[in-house]
Length: 174
Image: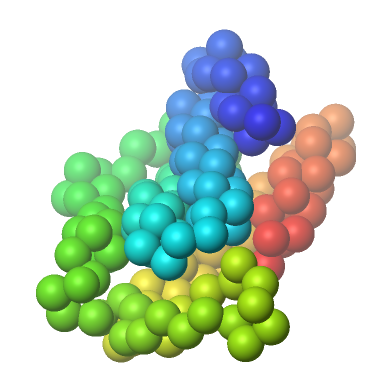
């Protein structure tokens, strides 16, 4: 609910540098959170897997939106070329498709094992694509943090606290 509220508040300020990307990122984080909560609350293994597949929409797009936000926050006067934007979306889109079709190839999850303690926890055995997506996501997050560090260093003193708060918020999930 917090992510959704922040997304709505940010959307109202979408004209500020990075506002649209930030709002969309928070909306994706809200989707991810809701799907993860539904997966955790579900008792049936098949329903858990469906919610996990749905959560990959948010999981996949948040790092890409973070790098777009960080870049536009750092250099609001420069637009990322469309070809570079398209290239950055390839891995997230492929990941969403792989998550949706995992039963055919098991590239994201190779196995599903119920927890031995009779809890509702399902242990996911990770396939090859999981590691590709994780690596890509962390590369984007670290690139975003580097951009945000540059913002914090380069901004005038008046805006430095704001930039440091944004940087802290980006580092926290890591």
